[in-house]
Length: 156
Image 1 (spheres, rainbow, N blue to C red):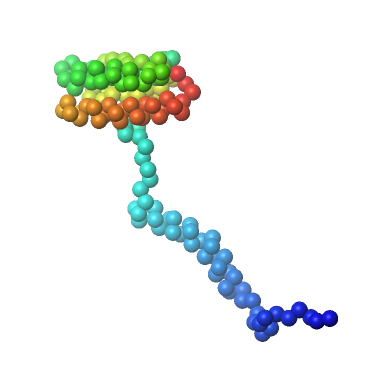
Image 2: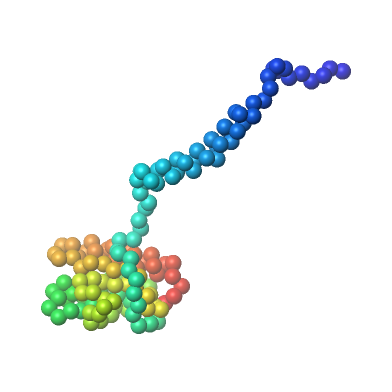
């Protein structure tokens, strides 16, 4: 019987190459990811349009669109019909959301619309635009975020 012969009988495996290959496979991707994030080459996707806030209001059974009303606030008065339209645009989820006007407080600043969940946590806020032309795009952004929150929430 014949013995099995190797193609290169004089060649021995080199442990240095094996170690370098293993390092390249495991360390190189981590190093590239770190470099990408630290150099600002990657910007994570942002799905929300509003500003995330923290705060607490009274508990309720529904999600709430809160419009803080301050004396002499023109933008506040113009935003009230927009909130009613957003409530109507929610369709079947409209019964899960209540539109509320509250007085300005330390938690609620004038010039913003807030989204609050049923336990009373303030989630997001949207600055009221200064011109009437900017009101519909802000309303679309608010509606988009509110739909996403309602989709993934079991509360309310």
